[in-house]
Length: 307
Image 1 (spheres, rainbow, N blue to C red):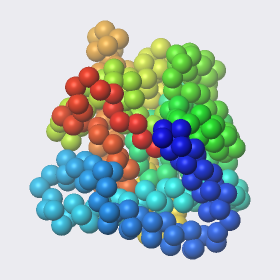
Image 2 (cartoon, rainbow, N blue to C red):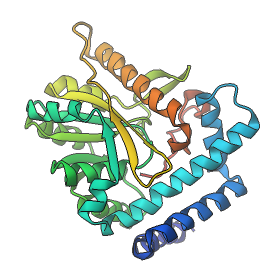
Image 3 (cartoon, rainbow, N blue to C red):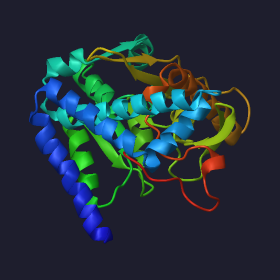
């Protein structure tokens, strides 16, 4: 049954990339909203988890407010997928016009300084579109990592998709990714990492919306070891076809403390920056998995989710 389910999953993703990309954009948007509303009405585990996560982000929200947020959240999530399926067919001009980031000077100044830059993002809006914009508008290649999915053919689809957008993609597992990322940064390059959920179960504990969660140590460790600048980025949608975003100021490496202590301080600063963007646009935070330690079963890894 597992093999059949994996082949079905891979086939569905292939159908999305093969079919949705050919639809007129208004049709794709309507299709995404329809699928989102159907999924929301079914109240599956993902929708319930999304509401549970929003309850921490918006404390004191009524059940009606949480339901509104989860419906908007599913619509935002399906907008991400519809855009991602269509991105390979977008023209350069469409990609350039599709994203409008604020405070971009933090990134461009950092790259101009030749120190290397680590951009760390939460699962907000469409991080793939932001990456395509960087490679297209700024003409800046970058390196990222991807969770190794099953079946392997599905992982290969995501790697090919992102490489087609100009990204260098390394597997999250295997142990060699960190060294490659460090080399890219020492050469003055750019690394982009989605960093609000720890996939290793050995990340850094942070206070996130008042409770303990675990986030990956990689961004902070890379900045310490290479001298690269670490910058949070938050993204959001509005009522226009253009995604918005903000590059936050660099997070400084503490002057004193052990490596672990410095990593803890820097990762907490990342979590705080992520929290500001998520609090302002909770419906665009696509966290359909368990995140806070209180929700994780002892002895089990965090749930796997969409890459």
